[in-house]
Structure formats: C-alpha cells, structure tokens
Length: 213
Image 1 (cartoon, rainbow, N blue to C red):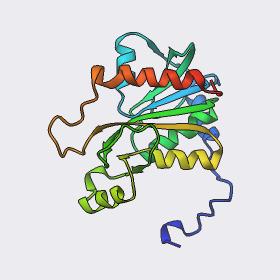
Image 2: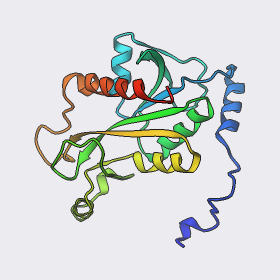
Image 3: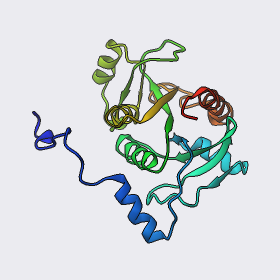
C-alpha cells in the first residue's frame, strides 16, 4: 500500500464530521439551522451564478454557514434550487458537497467545463478524467487517456462520485466540453451568454424529472 494510504482505514468512521463544522459556524455567525434547498448545483466556472445575479434572478441563502462559499437560491423547474459558484477542484468540491448534504440537500448536480480528449461526439454519457493539476499534464498522459476511451478532462467528477459511492448521496456530474486545453485558436468558447442559456435548460430538464426534486 502506498505510504499516502498508511493508517487511513477507510472503513472506519471519521472523527471530524461536516455537521460539527456547520454547528460551530452557525454558533459563531449567529445563524439559525435552516435546511438548504433539496436540489443544489455546483457551478465551478461561476458563469451561471454571475448571470443569475446580474439579472436579479437569485438571492443569497442567508442561513448558509459555510466559511468558504455563498449559497444562492433561484427558481428552476418550479422549485427553489440552491447554487454555489467557483467550487473548483476535487477536494473543494467534495468539501462543499459534504456540507450541502449535511444541511438538507438531497440531490446535487455539478456542471463544469472540460477539455476535449477524444475528438468525437456529441456524447450524453461517457468517461472523463479528473485532474488536480491541469497545467502539469503531459502529451503522454493525454494520449494514454485517449487510448482508454476517455472523452474529456475536468477537475471534480471522480472525487464527487467517490463521495457519492461512500455516502449514498444522490449526485450527477455534467461536463460541457469547451476547449482542447489551449491547443487551438478560438478555444474556451462556451456559446451564447457563456453557455449559461444551454446550461440552465439542461439543468431544468434534469431537475424536472428527478425523483429527488
């Protein structure tokens, strides 16, 4: 076993739980214990959050005690949905997911942008590669991922799905392939309104048929 995993005992209960952190944050901030919306969204790029705020379609969820983020609420698919922007990277995404589910969330969606590995599609379901170091990946690593049928690279999905498997939390990761990792001109283009119109339409359709909504 790698030294990094020595004495980890993943089947044993954790000592530090999200509920304890949230309890102390509420105490320090003088907040009441109010459940977050049943359906919440992680918006790593922050484009959706910025659009909703700009159009006055969202408002802060004042009882959210997290030290690191702001939770907004807005109407989508006939209900109030929570959304948090700029949750970038696997460790941060899981930290916030843990806090959301400890606060009443029942279904979490993550919609991130991704780099293209295999030039084909469109795809609705497929494999992605989660990296913690996008500026350190090599051509050999990218080609190895391509040879295994990986379609895109992003920064959160593997950790979020590991959390879902370990906890039983209902979670879905979506990736909008927007770039070829800076290897071509006109890269990182998301489309109309930074892709938010299509993103909101997709999210609304999923939430509308979700059994957790």
